[in-house]
Structure formats: C-alpha cells, structure tokens
Image 1 (tube, rainbow, N blue to C red):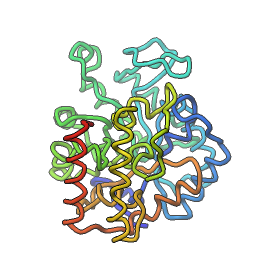
Image 2: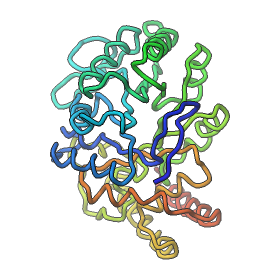
Image 3: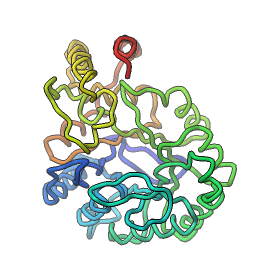
Image 4: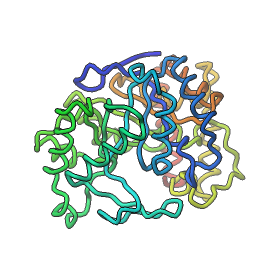
Length: 335
C-alpha cells in the first residue's frame, strides 16, 4: 500500500481510503450487516488501508457508530475523516431531504459546526478527528446571510486550535467556495469531490486548485457506485431511495450503454492483467500523486477487489484511449 501526507499536514494516510458510506445501511444501502462491516474495516487495515471516510448523514449516524466500534481500542492506528453540516429532526437550518422517515437539515452556523463535531466525536468514540469536512457548501445567496462563510471558518479553526480536529477539508465545493474559505483564513488541506472515468469535471477546475495550493484531492465514487466494476448486468433495477437512484449512468435509458462501455475496456484490462476496478482507480490517480481514492465496501471480497489497485500504473497513451472512449459514450448518450 502506498501512503501520502494530507495537504501540508503530517497525517500519513493510505492512498486508498475505506469508504464507510455503504455500511451506514438504511434505504441508501440496504442489507448492511454491522459485524460484517467491522470485519471488513479490520481486513482493510490488514491490507494497509489505515484511512476511513464517514459522515453523519450515512445511515443517520450509524456509519460513524460502526466505525467507532471497529476502531475501539486502536484509535491511533487509523486516520478518520468525517463531516459537518447535516443533521436530522432538529428543524434547524435549510430542509434538504427526508431520509428513512427523518427530515434532514443543512446548517453551517458556528454553533451548528461545533455541535456536529461533538456529536461525531461521541458516535466515533474518540476525542479527535483527523480530517473534518464541511459536507456541502452554502450555494443559495439568501442562506449566506444566515450562514456567512466567516462563521463556518471560525468554527472550523476553533475546533482545530482546540485539538478536536487535525485537518480541515471541504466536500462538494466549487472553486469559488474554496477561494471564499481561504480568503477568511481557513487552512484547507483536502478537497473531496466525485471523480470517475465517467465524471471528469474536476479535472477542469478543482484539480488545478489542489495543485496550486498543495491540497490533497479525495476522490469519491471512483467506480460509479459499482458500475465500473464489470459486474453489473443490463437488467439491474435500482430500487427507490437507493444511493444510485440519482446517478446519471444508472438511469434505465443509459445503463445498458454504460455497461457496454465497461465491457469494452476488457482489452485494456487484459493488456495490464488487471480488473475493471483496477483500471477505474488507476485512471484517476494517473500522474496525480495528490489524489487519494475513497473505495466503499461492505464485504471483505469487495474490499479486496479494490485494495490492490494502487499496483496498477497506466501509460499516457492508455489513459488517452480510455478518455477517448468515454467522450465517445458521452457524445452519444449524455451523462
């Protein structure tokens, strides 16, 4: 396993992060088993994966609780990443969605961030968090009056000064949000956004900012919620409320074409003696040592399929060919 420093910190993280979103269960990821999830986290560590990414919204606190049980008694071995701004049943903040019968709200105020952190610390059973993200930025100008960036940044910096978090990150942000945070004195070391072969928008505006400021980029959903593994069939039906329901390439009219695209990568996999999963992750890490990949898994067999991906290094011409095929798919069927 490769390891990397997060931004300008001394946090030593595995290049592959264990993604704990699926172990939260609920409607988004039904069928999760806590014991299996804990065993999978322990197996991840055995394979060299010391970094775990979770969030309160994943299973409405359940993902954090399972992670807390898994790391109990060995906290210092792990790098834990979680997030602020989502809460449920409080009636405070902007209403977001209803999840598993609970009304979820988004709030970026000073007290909200502090409270979110304290709640996460309790669920995780720890007294510090290594990487602490704001989960989503405030995009509505009207809400910026209620939740000014200055208040959000002050809360994050106070938590860092108090030793409750070691590193500040920002998730699902655009360039203007990053610049606004930094203009307020926020010490951002890591940015988290979706990045896959079929979702490459961050290459234009986010990755250049990470390179400019020496930030780590934390790529989530690298295998498109399983689509890029080569194991999804054309008759697959996404149940209502599932985490894949709003993903473009999982739509019924696009899924068959996406599967044809993935099947069409087999010639490249044969050349490199790797799987489609290996290829998907190697693509986004190509010539980008600052990219850390979040790989979600609920079972050991799925985890092991992604743990070895750091051993695959693609040539420039191979990456260009994968990109050409992806652009051809997008030109025909959108994305």
